[in-house]
Image (cartoon, rainbow, N blue to C red; front, side, top):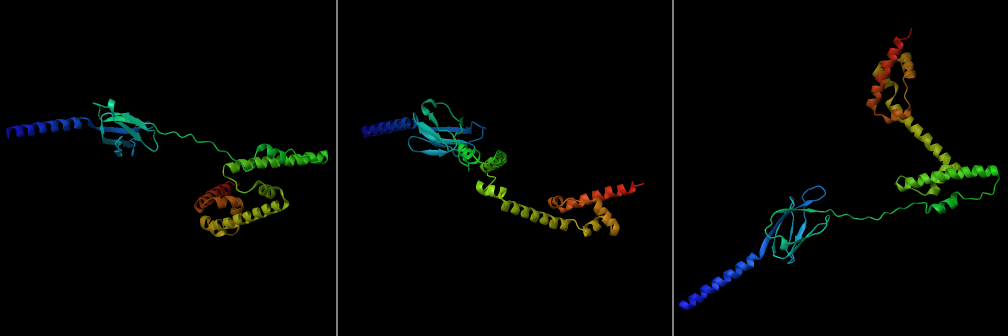
Length: 259
């Protein structure tokens, strides 16, 4: 009986020693991860062990994960370079700070133009043999050069996203008789719209309300204080009313200064 108890005691001691040896090989990795660019904590950095266990850093960049001596931990992130930590050199070190290098992507430059190669453009629009008299050639050449400058400007604006449509359409609207007539008609419509808009802000009733001028005095004041329709359209009503009052002050000074 005593022999059995002795063997049982020895078995418990051996199990305890084996457990301690196994536990001594395990440790906990604790660290804080920050950005090398600005020193801010890195959120959601993934720390993985060879055994498949993984943890994510919190809002403070902190993480804690169990590992075995000799494990190689992998720290990965979507916007930072991957970092590898060898735990064999980690013994006796705790709660250090790691700085992760932001990833740098090399993007290929892409350029495009709606006019094609410059050499093709020059051949089509500049190097033309017109076969006319010298005077006509000079005039046509100047016109071609003017068109070329227009297209170069159109090309630059198109590359900046400022112009839509084809160069041929632009040239037709710019130089053809029909295009000029449409442009003139559009200018007249715009001028008429400005006049209508200005009339709502600057009419006799508003001037009388602000100045108390009527009849002949109102006519004289309107001759003295006039605004371009484009200015009346551009400013808001309050600013226009202040300008009318300022103009009334100048009008009074002018009237009093007369001999």
